[in-house]
View 1: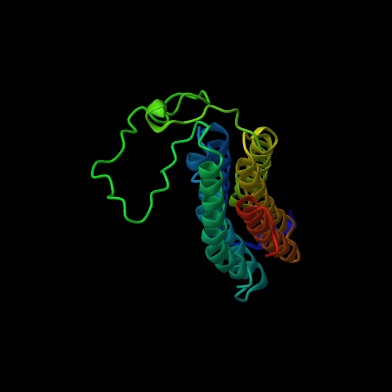
View 2 (view 1 turned 90 degrees about the vertical axis):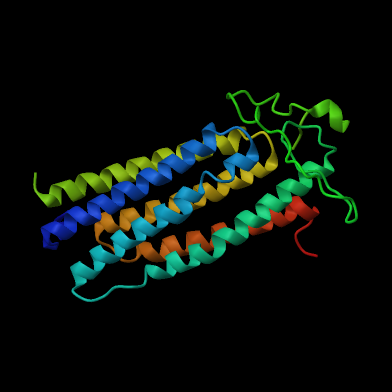
Length: 158
Length: 94
């Protein structure tokens, strides 16, 4: 890697720090995608890679190419802006699709899904008791109050 | 241990970490209990591949990996949106 020798030492250390932290955050996001229990928890994990991982690696790449070519190289910021715009859209659509699918499948699965209420029903004052939700790593038994909501047990299918 | 060597090792570590992240999200895509898990895992794989392209471009000093990364980002967004629309409506084009 001969082109790395043209960098100033301080900048090289800073770029190395950015790259290491960014890729570690991306790895943590994917690890959360594997380890977390329910889909609505898993939806939050990869946003580490989407936001901080992309930000840090794009910053490192911009700094490195700017210092190598002795002029501001800013085209990597297009990726950053694109990710900033598209990530909320795609994850919001995915979350709403999952919510709709969970409601339409007669709730015969193990997710805690807010029920669909008609417009005129009074809203519940107290939040639902979710204290025993999300414990452990077994993918069943999350719903503690299943019998109160007349849920039909059913194998979750795709 | 010059700073250049540290940067070289850092780039290698970052590429290995992103490959590991690709493997983890691929596991979730293959296992994932329901369809939305698979879509989320595919989206994560797209982003990890895009970051990996950026890192390979940094390691080789080649600017043109950036364009591949941009194409991967756009394709990942379109894939996720289309799959989410399909999951919600049952059809893509309305």
